[in-house]
Length: 124
Image 1: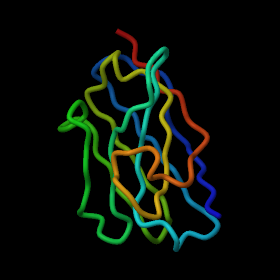
Image 2 (image 1 turned 90 degrees about the vertical axis):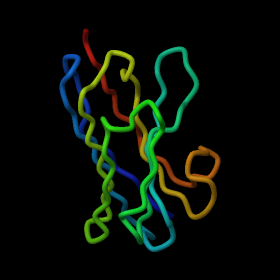
Image 3 (image 1 turned 60 degrees about the vertical axis):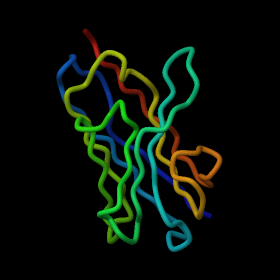
Image 4 (image 1 turned 90 degrees about the horizontal axis):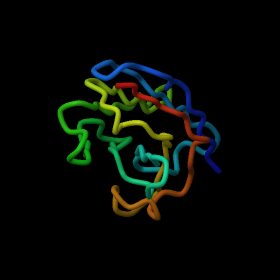
């Protein structure tokens, strides 16, 4: 089992920045990548970004965050971080980190473990 504990988030004005972190504990050798998803009020959960935990240079982003968000992973700390710049009101959502043993990075069903979620609110 893997436990994911999220931190960060909060309220920020449009154009501002926030950082989300997610630390894994437990059987941390079993997952191969970590990702971030979000769910805005009244909307479906959507994929944000993912990163390989063994090759940190391999990352993937949803089109709507490319150039604004950066995902990184510290294997020693088993922590994935999402740096969010140039935030927009439409980025307001609950953000979830997740760890996957295998599968398509952008598909929520590929993820086996989930964090508790953290609220990000961007005011206009």
